[in-house]
Image (cartoon, rainbow, N blue to C red; front, side):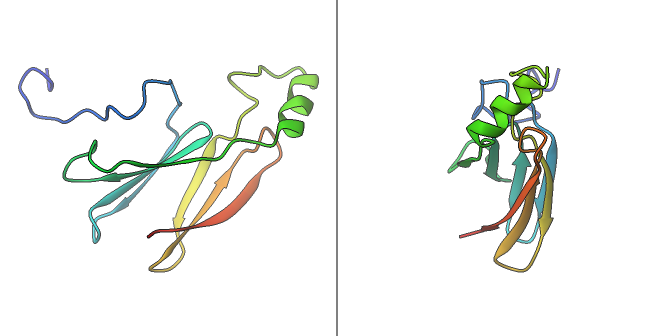
Length: 111
């Protein structure tokens, strides 16, 4: 209904089934950060499909292999699902992902 009434703009940047998990709204700068499977997206709030920035951040291959050896599903469990997007300061965001059952965190500089 929203699409038919032109009341929304769908995000077209991902047709890969990335399993979006977490959001961070930055109203001050008009941005939206989205944590997904192996990716972090930075979107413009005015037009979600304009100047989309994407960071590919997969789990290490050896961690994925260990995950599969533990009997986990390679496609639905053995990836780096981004779970935390937290403002750190005016220029950085703190990010954590599952890392195929070996959590990892880092900082992203928002340029």
